[in-house]
Length: 171
Image 1 (tube, rainbow, N blue to C red):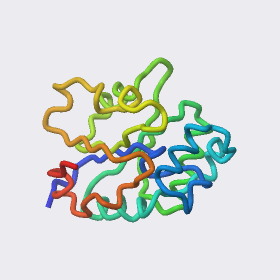
Image 2: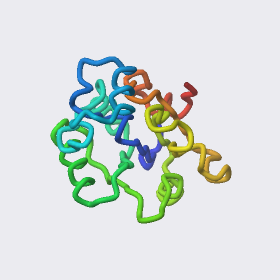
Image 3: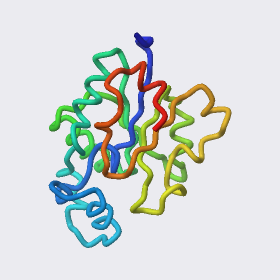
Image 4: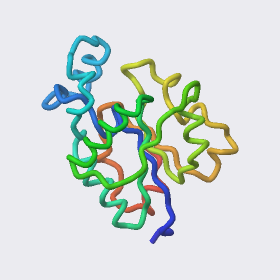
């Protein structure tokens, strides 16, 4: 059993939640919707939905003693509040939603909060690695932590329910 203080941080948009019109579409179609940028549900943040069984997966980790937190792509407080409402409405575990301050990078957010495990997506629809968290975190900060990258809009259902197995996951 992992220590009770294990901190898991999950990126929200594209990793565990998505635009409502992505429902019943393939992962590739969802990526295409974002690249196209014309779908109004992309900006309707209050109507975002879980990707797969993300809420259940995070609840399983929380039941094992993990403290869950999130990173939002939003900077505006009202948009972060929309994220909070979406998480509550869909049964995600309670947790702090971190966002970037003006001029702050996602890597700086990760270095500020220092999670034991960070789960993010590969940001395929918006430019890939330059937009991700983990490639830009200093090596000394990454050392001893678990950094998991999933396919954007592919969800986290395939990740282990068991937190000890998650710590060893190399996908």
